[in-house]
Amino acid sequence: MSTIRVALPAHLRALAGVGAEISLEVPDPPTADRLLDILEADHPMLRGTIREHGTRRRRAYIRYLAGGRDISFEPTDVPLPAGVIAGEDVFRVVGAISGG
Image (cartoon, rainbow, N blue to C red; front, side, top):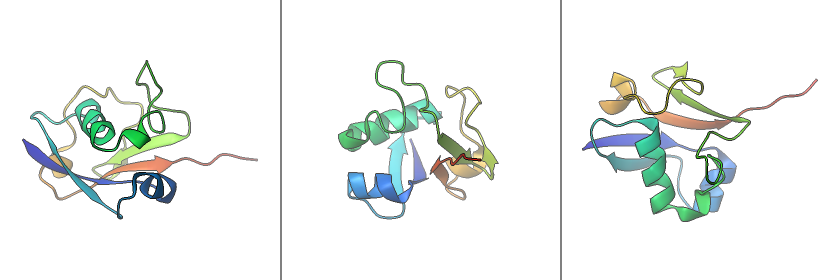
C-alpha cells in the first residue's frame, strides 16, 4: 500500500466536505484508476464529477497533474510518478478553463 496525497479544486472539496489535501491508501502499484476508485468509494458524492459514469473516462475540463506534469492524456492504468508514490508530490485534480 502507498499513501497518496490528493488535492482537489475548491468546488469538489466543498462537495466532498474535505480540506485542501486528502491522503488515501492505494494498493501497489498505485495508478490513477486505483486512486480515483478509492477516492470515489470514500467520497461517493464525487462520482461523476471527475470521471464519467459508466465509462470512467476523465470528464472534459478536468486535468490530472502529478510529478510536476500533466498526465491527463496518459494511460490511467500505469503506476503514478515516483514522487507521488513516495509522498513527495501531490496528485492534483484540476478544473481546466477555456474561452476566447
